Image (cartoon, rainbow, N blue to C red; front, side, top):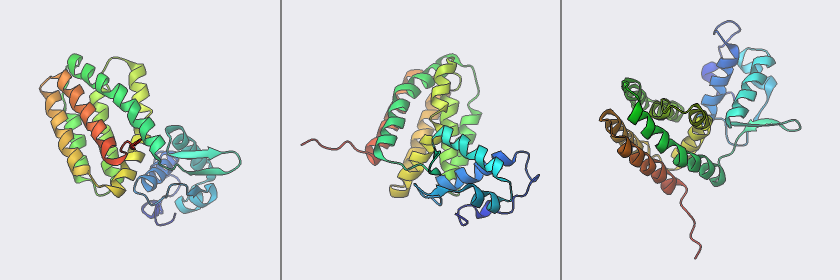
Length: 223
């Protein structure tokens, strides 16, 4: 655990506006780069000592991470890093496949907006130094596509999948580092959005999400 959170080891009370947010970012980064391993216990006292904070911001950060699906908490076992299995990946990506192309197409069809934030997110992904930065930049890109769809419930549902999407993608890249292919697909989707073509954006997103699943979690033959 100390290696995973070493970049944050000099944090001290008052060094950042929100100690809870600092702890949250540190633990999330450790999870998404694979330094905090799936199933690894997250002990409040150890994290608090490492980060130079009290147990309270650690506890609050872990609760938040549990709410987004990166951490599992139990009154009997404490907290641990969520494990990525095929069932989780299929559940997350099936929801995205059902919702995101529709939301993105609506955004492109109705929103009069600049796509500068989407392009900036892709530039950050290209410059990323690790899987955590790349995955979080990619999810920011995807959010620009659906955020202005006009349905706050739809946006909320997709927002609720963002951390689990990052977790699944980081785990998949550890086995099949396909981010360069996905970056090209992102650029194609962005060009379609910039051209104001909602149907094409929806079709490209369906292909993009479906191709990720086919590469990393292929359907098992029933023969």
